Length: 400
Image (cartoon, rainbow, N blue to C red; front, side):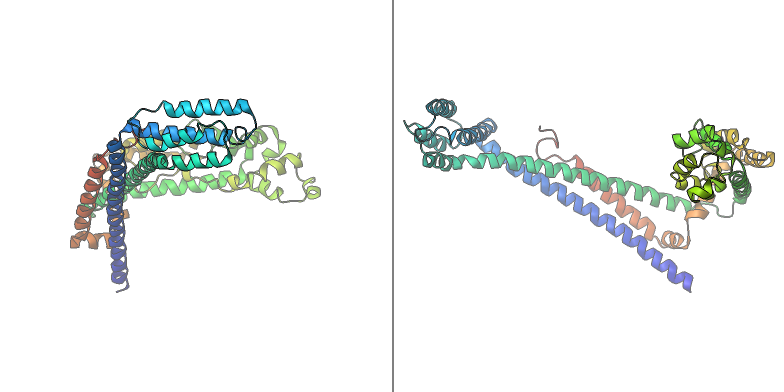
């Protein structure tokens, strides 16, 4: 009974996960289309006024405001006559260069007329800013276009992330349905048993090596592992390598050095040849040293593909000779030789099915719920992908 209730709870969680993804995909579609519509509205407003004309109006507005801010103090009253001449030359010249098709022409002409005087006051500058305000809409229009383009870009990024999540979930669920066809009575133990036997042996022998061998030997093994990237030991830090090569204290096992690193300076003087180096090196890398294990030298269950396992085994054997017995090496050869069986991939598939097709998954497959959810996820992916390829305006992200 308890198992049935647990399976029901798991089934509900699986359904909730699919529902959340479907809701997210729908939201991304809506967000992207809404962002594109907002951009299209702004582009339509710009097109109605003319792209070049809008840009010219906005550019002139910005330049005029910069001149007003720059010369307001020096060109007013009876101050700097040279500044007054420079300002009028630049300001009036800027506005006179505008073509007739530039929007808000009246605003620019009013500002020019106001500033075409023999003497200028602060009120004239403030009035000119008020005159130009009608042209500020075109600056805002270009700002809105930039904002809508950024919104479209963000919506596209979010949609692509959601699409990736959908692809991953669809692949996982397709695999689950495929596992449902696996022959669960196949002799999968013929793979599992030699792998477990090897893993147990190498784990124990590495533990013994770690606990009893000189730290220098262990570090040397880890350095050697750098030449075998498929065996994913974390490379030892440089100062730890130097310690292993140069310090006489590296003749001690790693657990002993970790114990020494906790001693006070006066106590450590009685145990270490170079107490300061030991504390500054071993203590600093305590976490790295404590986490060393045989895990990179073990075979995962379910096992990898035949080719991957053979390549990995070849590299692992080059390292096992540093500490493992011939019996353990022979166990790894047995594991490697299993990959040459004609039914290796079939047994590997069944092993994965045993690992991943639990009672909840079988229930969902047998009831048809898994297939129905997969179909809905595929439809959502297709719709999201199609929306990503829709274009209702300029190519997304193409405008500089």
